[in-house]
Image 1 (cartoon, one colour):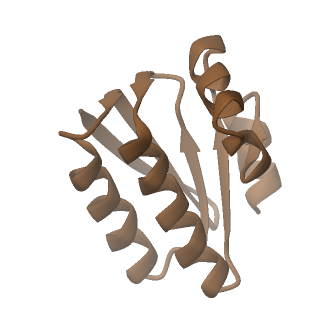
Image 2 (cartoon, rainbow, N blue to C red):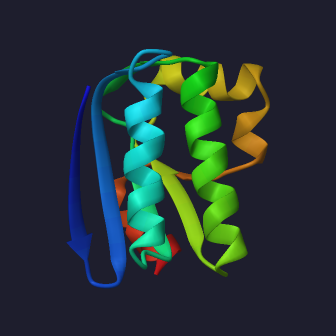
Length: 111
């Protein structure tokens, strides 16, 4: 898995690519934690290039969301494919996150 990080105003945009599974979730969690600990309070995670997410990947997002909540920040997800969205719905994770169709909408929601 590769992770690209960019900035759009005050919003940090994280774009993982590939699979977020038990092998890659540790690195994903670590990178999200580094961003939050480094002062990021508004984050968009764009999942359009993610083709699979496991329970470990969901945990990574939950941990980041909790860390941001504790800092009065905001986590927004965007770009979910139909399959990834289905996984979110099965686990009722779609009720725990703000989810937008596009990165632009996610940035607007997080700002």
